[in-house]
Image 1 (tube, rainbow, N blue to C red):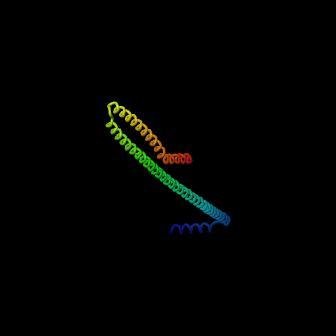
Image 2: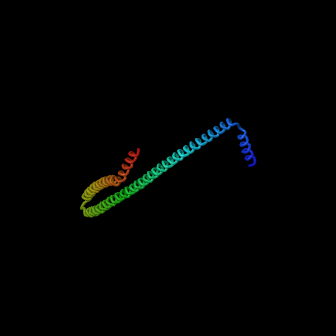
Image 3: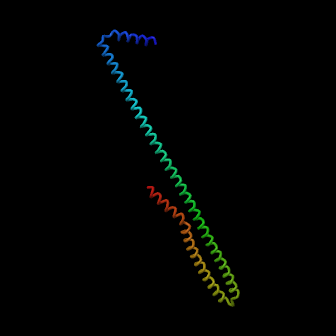
Amino acid sequence: MATTTKSKAATKTAAGKLKPAARKVAQKGTAQMNDTVEKITETAKKVGAETKARVETIVADANVRTREAMEKSVKSTEEMVEFSKGNVEALVESSKIAAEGLKSIGEDTAEFARKSFEEASASAKQFAAAKSPADMFKLQGDYARSAFDAIVAQTSKNTEAMLKLVGESMQPVSNRVAMAAEKIKTAA
């Protein structure tokens, strides 16, 4: 502190010793320096205010974009959950259709087996009642043909029923696949 006080005193003494023309120059230089400092200060304040405004705008814009992105993300997640729920529902529906169809085919097959057993029992009684071996072979041939025809017919019926069942049971899943393809096509 002592040196600062000595410097100020020396400056005053030196300024006091200056000639009036030099004093004017010194005062003019000081005034110009003060003007320059004021201009720099004002410019710095303006730049600072502009920078602050720009930063606030950038931050506000980033907040808006972040909010929009989050809303889109939430919406996409909700759509994905809803779509997955639809997929599960389609699989459940498909399983119900398959179970009902298999039950129907099983009942039909059981009925065929019951009828076949009754026909076999009736044929066995006819075989026992045959009067000659030739009659028995004829009855046996007739029974074999009718049993073969019945098995072929039942097999064809079961095959058609199974194909129809597969188509019907896969329809809900197929609809979901078509919907997924449409969503992908729309998104692309």
